[in-house]
Length: 264
Figure: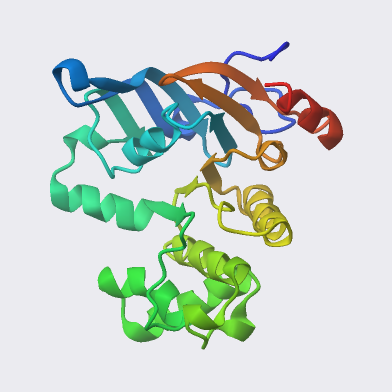
């Protein structure tokens, strides 16, 4: 894209770059290779990336460009072939399995396209589950679950199981579950992929408000240009590399941002 800017960690509308201590994510030389020999595929070919605390970053690119692989490595769901990932100053490669599990559970919230709610649990119980697994007392877990559901405006459906909820409602419950541990980082992989346009817009408005009002750090993969335009910064991946980036200052109109994105 013409006028694409070099990577920076500016919050929308700010004039100064945050210091290293304010980074939520730092990625250096990140590579991921699958297979060997003639079946060898390089999914990521050396990614450098900083994400500032409170920043909302959208990642775009064609299928197979490495978007989901990048999220999985940052979230500690897979192991890189080379390079490093730091989340909140923690080098994931230095953590044993127990500490990595604890970091994922307490510092990273995951939002998936398929919601991944347990069918036999109510919305409130699904949201409380990460806390229960982490040893939080049941009463405290229930109170925190209710607060998270209030945050996404779905407390009136808290006693319903997933099968009684619409797709948009299920995704809001999933977002509440991701928020209940007060994570440093939200990783969202195509969070609107299974939703109709109205529900998608509601979810994106919610994510934008979390970034604005709570300074929630969000890294989101999406194919939707209008949703990507709601982020603070955009990355485009191609063949496992970041090939274009753009920061979206507040002064730019949404229509102009969308027009530029659709030209990518």
